Image (cartoon, rainbow, N blue to C red):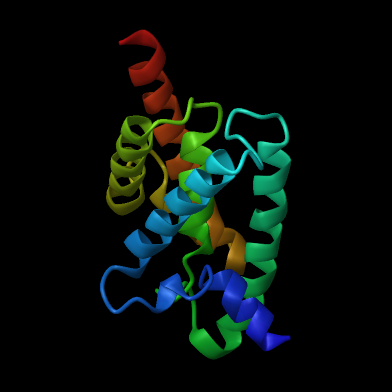
Length: 152
């Protein structure tokens, strides 16, 4: 059971990257989005996308809570939050590599700088706090990306 939690929380092991594990998780999220689009499995503009993201978020919270005993509070190995944040960034955005690149840059900015109340989200307990800041960073990134894609 612990192995499944490690696979989920580390986003298939990308959290074990020796260099910038959060960035590795966000890059993995981009690759998964590409796979969804390429193989016509699930589109980021589909109404099924958000329930899918919600289910993965809940699994991420559960796995993070489970592993916190061994790994400590908000460990760098947990990057499922970056995956979720990146997917939220791309929700209802037409897939193109330019949009994914812009979304990636926006999400990493909001995730690292943590402006506009994002840092306060880390105060929530356990896995919810781990996920909440990236969810809000994803929401802000999504709003800015919508402005760029649809208004500029």
